[in-house]
Image (cartoon, rainbow, N blue to C red; front, side):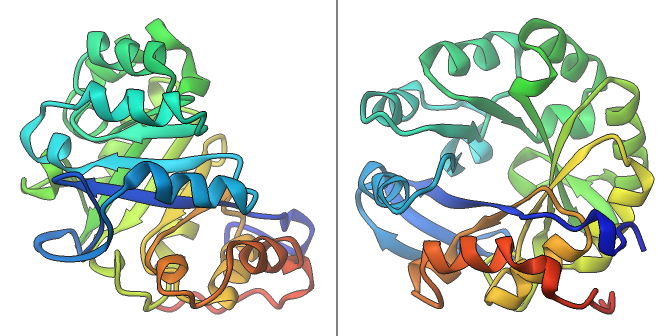
Length: 258
């Protein structure tokens, strides 16, 4: 197991605002045909989480992810509202990554570039610095997906090795088959990636549905957790999530089951 009792720490809870056709949605298992709508004002959704104490919001431009054309107007809407955010979706060049940071994004999330173009990923890190970049490793059946989760993907272990070699410091790991399901995160996957790349901070995504899930992620050493549907459906409040993550050092280390 990648973490022991002395390594446990509070997980940073990062609310998700996924945007599709101008609406706040959550996809189920990465399927664009199975989306749940949670509002028509993405900025208002993000402002709510900031008001409740979030220091960072995870924004995904799903249209950009699917088409490869990110929407700078969307970026600017969050910046103009004073929302601290990291942005992903369709950012596949040095120019677009630089533009997102210039527009106000705290960090840029790269999926397709991280999976398929290690040289480009390295160029973007060189241009912006490693702390501005989050590599998205969206895993289904052992393969990391790109292209809006519509391609066949690459073996996740090879993708991770490339990221380590090129100096990645933050990786967002999503179990695609659990995303939007609230069935619990894939603890084994998170633990395996932490063990394989101990120098990288692992942000867990996909499946969080309870406060115990956050405690478990803290117990295995995740640095942060993306939470979406469970917050929108009021399984718990943002403050309750923060308190659970902060008290996780009292929780037993979970058994890592699939």
